[in-house]
Amino acid sequence: MAMEKSDWVRLGAVLVTLAGLVATVALLAAFGFADVLAVLRRVGLLGFVLYTGYTLLILALLGLAWCLLAPGQTPAPPARRLWVFVWARTTREAATDVLPFSQFGGIVIGARTLITAGVPQPMVYASLVADQTAELAAQLVYTFYAVAALALLLSRQPSGGDLLGLAAAGLGVSIAIIVAFTFAQRPLLVFAARMAGVLLPGSTAGLTSVRDTLDAIYRRRGPLVASFLLHIVTWVGGGAGAWIGLHFMGIDLPLQSVLVIEGLIFTLRSAAFLVPGAIGLQEGAYVLIGPLFGLPPEAALALSLLKRARDLGFGIPVMLAWQFGEGRGLLRKPAQ
Image (cartoon, rainbow, N blue to C red):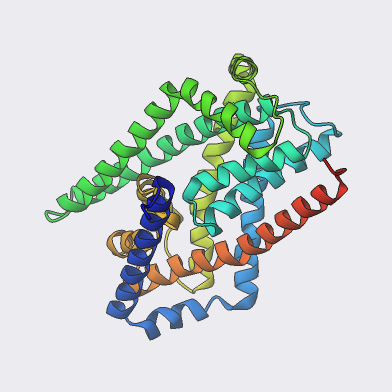
């Protein structure tokens, strides 16, 4: 029986993930499993809980950035409205980290969360496109900062050309992604309108209504700028989270250095967005970039593993809670 296109896509995702796992194990073996785990154990249970809890602050700001683009669009008071968007952003991130769909699965589940909360479907898809645009633009600012800092550092080292070229390539991909996303928003709206029919039977989110809603969002410059600035804060805050993790490991590295490392890691992860979780690529990038800023390879690998442990420790309960809520919602609906 011939394999369908979707089957080949799934097979490709599995093979890429397995290759990433093999690369990660190879890196751990090269730098010593025991040494990496010894650094990781310094975090302790309390440190891990605090490190994971810091993620809640970042998610709250991300939810606020999304909510600002869709004011008054939920059948709930303002406090409840903000919670709806924070929860949608939480499920969106958890699905991205846990499920084998890369970023696309997270976007679909985040949209589904808003729809089931009562947000009008045209607003869900229009605000999602606008929020993603603001987030990519903010990431580009952070990426420019990280690549410029790396170029300044490598300018003093005669052998850093290859790594600078890799970072520049990542920057180029990031620029291409945001340019393509910005100028391809009309096709994305067609995709959004079709997605509505997939997520909910009898969807009313037509292309015209979604497009009109997006135009209305872009006319409100104040909330759009505020969302962009909040996304810059969350990108920097995400980098600061790595600094907190290193602190729990007993590794004192200047915050500025950690922000540059994380900016470069975020850039390379975005360039490899088709690889689920950037498995293997993230670990390799840490090993390449970390030592330039005084982060030993075993500590860099420990930090990568700590981030993955946080993603799983936070993402799996969120996905279970989301699934439980979906089940309750289906039970409350009358039989069709």
